[in-house]
Amino acid sequence: MTRKQALVVRGGWEGHEPVRATELFLPFLRGNGYAVRVEESPEVYADAAAMAGTDLVVQCVTMSEITGEQVAGLSAAVAAGTGLTGWHGGICDSYRSSSDYLHLVGGQFATHPGKEPCERAGGQEDNYLPYAVEFTEAGRQHPVTAGVEDFELCTEQYWVLHDDLIDVLATTTHPARPWQPWHRPVRSPAVWTRRWGAGRIVVTTPGHSLDVLENPNVRTVIERGMLWATRTVSAS
Image (cartoon, rainbow, N blue to C red; front, side, top):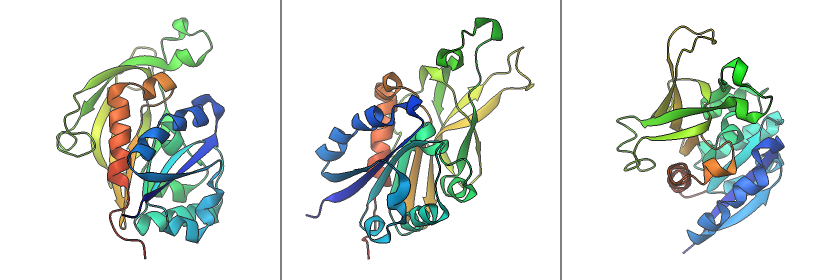
């Protein structure tokens, strides 16, 4: 039986520890029969032959830059059946200057609301808030999230701008607090899938730090997302 080919692309902002974060999932991929290739930049996306032979892309690249040729290569590969998945800023805060990448993924990090100003000390923890991840009716039936109960985290809570081509499996709600300028609670997607041609995309927004990635609920969703996103049609 031919082994599935997984491509892990990592880099960008070091605050998300792209190397250590992706290393958490390499044993899972190999244990599920994937041959794993690791790249430290998106340059490989422009290699049509390499991408045609890739069944799953796991991306962990926050911010950074991508060329038009590279994003076109990634989009074409997904449309042809290559799966794409990732978590947090590594997939939905990547390549901010590329509208084509945003169009592919379907959602873009906008902000992570912070604590009351008088409680802030100047570190990343200023943006750590307690919040709930709540599964939608679709999420309670989807293979990526079925059987996972609503859960709570205390970490960055992503506010995501998105379109309606995504299938939302879980949401999170940003309350309207007195020190913030919005006037009513805002619901944001926390986990979603997207069909792009023959390909499948899964985005999981929690995952700011290693302890969040090791949360059993977060890890389950990410790992199931890898399996579900993997190519389901034969590469030509």
